[in-house]
Amino acid sequence: MKVEAVTLREIQMPLVHFFETSFSRTYSRRILLVTVHCEGVNGWGECVAGENPFYSSEWTESAWPTLKQFLAPALIGHDLTSARECVPLMARVRGHRMAKAALENALWDAEAKQKQLPLWKLLGGAKREVQCGVSIGIQDSIEQLLEKIETELAAGYRRIKVKVKPGWDVNVLERIRSRWSDILLSSDANSAYSLDELEHLRKFDQFNLLMIEQPLWDDDIYYHSRLQRELRTAICLDESIHHARDAAAAVETGACRIINIKVGRVGGFTEAKKVHDVCQANNIPVWCGGMLESGIGRAHNVALSTLENFRLPGDVSASKRYWKEDVIAPEVEVTPHGTIIIRDEPGTGYQVREDLIEKLTVRKETIRAVAGK
Ligand code: OSB
Ligand code: MG
Image (cartoon, rainbow, N blue to C red):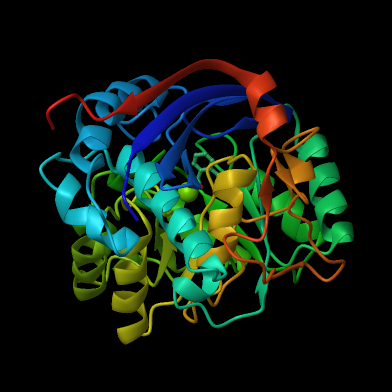
């Protein structure tokens, strides 16, 4: 599998409904897609970096030049027997995990197609059906949020996660629980609190939540372990976990009881599998997080979710919750009982709609080997 060239493109896709977290509100996505060209096989990957550096330090505009000037040139011209061999080739670049993941995952897609294997099998997956939950952003009113929850429960989703922040938390959870006393419910703070708010955070314990995700600083593990000792509710780490070593440190210090794996946040499928394995060995359940992906990243999340220790419903939901029209065919669909059935075709099992992608593209650049290299 010789890497001959890499195409970067930015597509712009408006969301069906805005998505608001404790750090920002998004109406439209600027998504960087990566295509690897390997001897007649094209692999596709999605960079999950946001439009701003508010979730993590990476964003669309930091990923593009990093891929163009460092990551793609590190791979072009190499003949790989498997996608994971790209990891040491890109290791010189520190951080930029979402940029790396886009490229690595595109290679996994190419490898699966070349070997005529479904991606989920190549990744070592075991499940043929994965459980889905939804992540519901902060709304303009609590009534609007309750309406959304009602819609998603009717659609069959197995877990409702609501975004919280100071001023939109205990009051909101109270209203949800008084209407639905026994649904699987969790909350995600995206680092909106500090340890000084311990007494306030204790109030979350009354709602029988499956978890509170990332209550404290995005780069912290230690203080989460202090907080976890004080709460009955399980803490789930998202932003803080960048690789398997972070996961091991979180487990060792007791900083969380659950981990959210986002393949972009940890730098690609190879590291995502390692995080999964560390958690499995320590009896920490994981679930697959989402980053408002287009169908390309979404299909990768579906494949990753087939690994055995993805024991809780993920933020992997139907394409139509995000997009009027997704860039894959078929779109990701969810059964009335809140699951996605795994497809068995080679690669992701979802066809990339290149014609539609072309229409959505606002910039595009192909990087090839420089003469003499
Ligand atoms: O923290 O999980 C998060 C979206 C953007 C940035 C961070 C997060 C999210 C979500 C959305 O919760 C999950 C989804 O794709 O539905
Ligand atoms: Mg989160």
